[in-house]
Image (tube, rainbow, N blue to C red):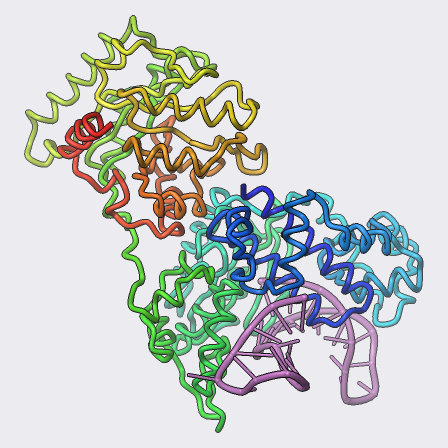
Length: 585
DNA sequence: GCCGTTTTCGGCCCGACTGTTTTCAGTCG
């Protein structure tokens, strides 16, 4: 499970922090950080790599760290980590989370003032003691005081993509209107569409950087300007979100965009390739040994200089995309235009806010050609649910809308509604509706909503049993995680994927920002095992279709092409796919 | 601690920004 990967990554990061506090070599601490990052970006389950004795294939993992990973997987603990934790006060590690407090300052505060927690630091700042420390003046003391307070307000860590993306769009719209601005794009993990991002960062191409910065700082959403330089400005919004803006001259746009998009691991790999050609690569372009430059106006030129095709940002995690690019085997990724249908949305037949016609109009507006209305059945604890008793009304309603499109202008004929339901998978794997009722539907989504804490074996059997029901087309939000709230059910993911592939049942990429389930890592593994996937908005109102972009991001980050997704099939193909599945299963 | 077309030692990405400095250290991404 990815949970262990994250925990272990956190352990390695903490070890790096402790080693740094102890004055260890920065390269040694960097090694721990690099391994931690690799663990988080891992393209397949850590346990699997361990079982197959392939831990050393992880970038930045050698003999020693491989042994530590194995020890942790085997025993659930790490002796070296526990030893390190005993060597520094625990609160000192908390200190490192405060902006502008790094290992050097933390150690300095500890050594000179005995500060071992954020509370200590705040007290010392208020008492005016910090300015006595070497390298700290009155201004830094004041800044740190503000930083401690901001950190207390906002210690949630990473920002969900669903929060960061709309904020980015707002800022981008504002900046595009500034005279002299030619381009404005997200950079960093936001451009790579990670499910969570560290902060919101943008790159702007403009001739007059100062004018852009000034405009940026005056945006209504800016609460505080953290720093402002010639090329970079950082602000904090009222919600405590940090937004970074970098401005670059247009002729170096490509180099800057590539550099700041990352990921760190991708760029390190790219720079090693550059070095092999006697080039160094930075944010302003390539430099040859003789000092001459190669300037890239577009990102394509950066990759082309290294003999590579352009690599889509969603792939830039050093998970094999550079090797694929070298071999000319980059995947063709799904694009927004490939998404013809949506496989789960809700109307006021269950807990949706809008009626069928309103949802159809909204779906058409975002360019869809068909959608599965999959209202909750009454077995889910969602309040109002679809019952077999109102099924007649529901089917008549759907038929009426479809007839209306069939009669309309040629343009209108292009939309179709499939009558579906999101049925509940009960603890024993049976469904809350009878086969007779399910047989009347065009499409059946089955999801787990209750009894989320079953033991692994039982949960696995439960989902696989549900897939054996011939009416089930799609398993909704298969792992049931809620970002930042719930880790997801304990289930043998491999077994579920293999069963889905064998039965021909599709698995959902639920695009709801809190779900993103399956996520990129699991998408990639599912595809390797031959599973068909379907992106769903899970829209509960007219605005809900907008999240399809996030589902598509998970698909692209998982290397999915149109051939892997039900959404890329036409409305006419869906019943045929269904029929083939039933015969096959 | 990792890693290797510079291959078992000696490197390790690189530049911006800030504050407190009289030439630079620490932090950040």
